[in-house]
Length: 265
Ligand code: T3D
Image 1 (cartoon, rainbow, N blue to C red):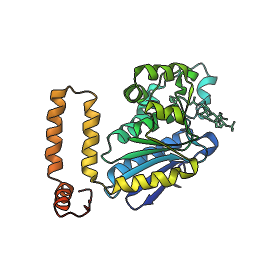
Image 2: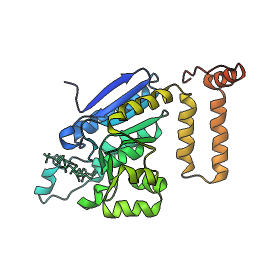
Image 3: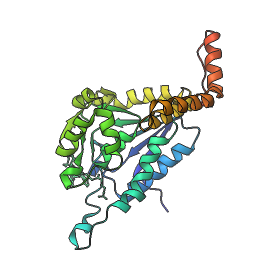
Image 4: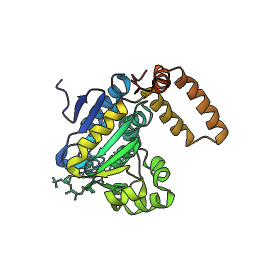
């Protein structure tokens, strides 16, 4: 069977970029794109030679969420609409992998991120936005609840009050407002986005990947832990990090007054 072109995969040394590729619909998520994205994210997670992943979109959009044209049939019959299983089967594995893969994941937000496309950007660890990027919690505009992790990440990232505003109104947030909210880490000129993200990704890919992966675990766990539990978890993770080759290399390089060469092991 021919390989799907819905996601374009580019490798540059230890950085893998996944580009959602349905530009005519601003990269709306139909089943083909969701399947291709699921496989590409899983491959990234499992491939130790990949030490940083970038998610971006082709054309003028990042991702417009569920492809509403693709599911138009649902709305022309009297059959009850059942959305839960669609989410569980096709969206949740992608979101879980982005949140838990033990390597840094950057969203290069090149345009509008709407609905589950906004959730995908939130599931990444860092967000760098082009100046024409925007964010829309579009779910309410079609009578739905924010899904794919938006209700989990958004209030933690920008606060409950702002999260309520964005999810209740479904209004479009421009890149400048997103930066002010801490929703994105950085805004750059559209023409600079791939260069800036490429440089950041290359830098992260040369860092101690294991330590970054464990840090991600710690920060994810902190959302549900009290201080006692988190201190204990940090101690356990530090035991693992302390045994890594990169820890030995980092300290040795410091003492020898040279730059460390991290391998991710
Ligand atoms: O299974 C389930 O349903 C459960 C899962 C739910 C998860 C969700 O994501 S629900 C939310 C789904 N997404 C939306 O509701 C967003 C719909 N799109 C928009 O609100 C707007 O298009 C945008 C705010 C994203 C962008 O606006 P704008 O003015 O920049 O562009 P546009 O002209 O509206 O769109 C450009 C084209 O993309 C247009 O096609 P055309 O007219 O040129 O042939 C438009 O129809 C298409 N498009 C945009 N979003 C979608 C889409 N086509 C299909 N599905 C879309 N989500």
